[in-house]
Amino acid sequence: MKPRNKKQQHIVELSGRLRPLTTPQMNWALNSTVSHYGYRLKSGMCTCMKCGHEWFGTRKGMCLCPECGTQIEIKDTKERVIRDKSYFNVITTIEDYQVVRMFLMMVEMRKGMKVKPAYLEIGQYFIDPKGNKTVVGLQRTLGYYIDSFAFGSPLEIRCDNEAFQRISDEWVYPRIKVTDTIKRNGFKGSCHHIHPVTLFQELLTNPKAETLMKANDIELLRYLCARPAYKSDIDKYWNTIKIAKRNGYKFKDVRMWFDYIKMLERMGKDINSPSLIAPQDLKTAHDEYVEKVNRQRVKEQKEANRKKAEADQAKFEELKSRYFGMAMTDGEIEIHSIDTIDDYYKIGESQSICCGTAKYFLKESTLTLTAYIGNKQIATIEISLDDYHIIQCRAFANGICEYTEQIAGIINANKKMIAERKRA
Image (cartoon, rainbow, N blue to C red):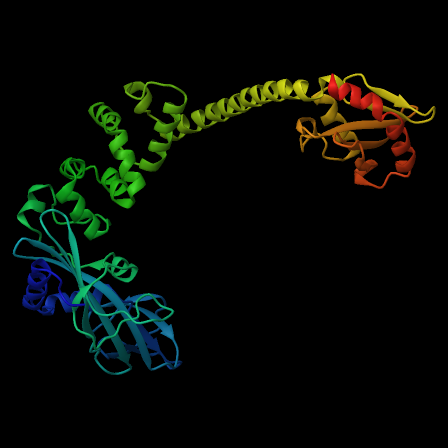
């Protein structure tokens, strides 16, 4: 898209002034970013697919080409062509901008011929002294692959996208040129397998990243740059980190250490105590607190359940206490009220129904009863408190109760008693 302001216009002008790839950069990309093979026939004649040299060899696996010295993998095959590609980055500067340049190398290796790769610049990240980034790149096309580019399109101002983000985190040419500000803030020539764009932005804007880089705490710096949530962990526990470092603690497994610190905090421990935050054996200390947190979680859940049960009990008594002790019979079937929450759960478990788990005891407009013949429970009944009709009458496992009509007759005969209790 067209530049929208003077800054973007200037960046487009600077993009056109960047130098093309140098011969050492192209040779490095060819040697380091793609795999190299030697094809061997049944006769034992081997061909280096990079330089085209042929020799007789029986060695399997990896070897060095006698001509160009490239480490190659020997394959027994009749194939004659290899097509491959790779993305790589060259990091440089222009004026006050830190620039990450993204390139595509396309290689076609033919048996008996010296390889001649093609190079194409895909895009550039321009990072200003305040850490703001601007993308100059090729136009992307619609397609299944995220790296589908319109190779004939010009390098123009583009919106940042996943393709550029992924490509800029690929191979990096080892000779890196950075601005004086980034150099002052601790950069010493290596990105340490951190996304270059993120690393430069953090070094320009985040004093903590500068401190970690200068102190060579690369694991913590890598954690900070990994994602925003991890960056917030660094900010939140910065004092704890400084205390651990002053006591000589070496950060190796940073993610486990932060998990451990968060567990200490959950358990109410002092996360500024060197004896706690700088354990000699992190894994053992971590596992110990995993068990403690699990026990604490179970305890908290029990307490929450207890408080919930107390609240449920108060509500249950408010709604149903007027019906406690209610009984009715026709001489054969006896129908009783359910007078405790525990009884609801016991009946639900013994009869394989949900009167307890579904909390029928808290329903305001219905009343749950249970019916027996002798000592055998034959049904669980839910009736409406509006007109006292049966909503449902369930036998074991929600089955159909064969005594439903007889039970309905008993309830109809005792409507007056239920109504009196309702008004009580």
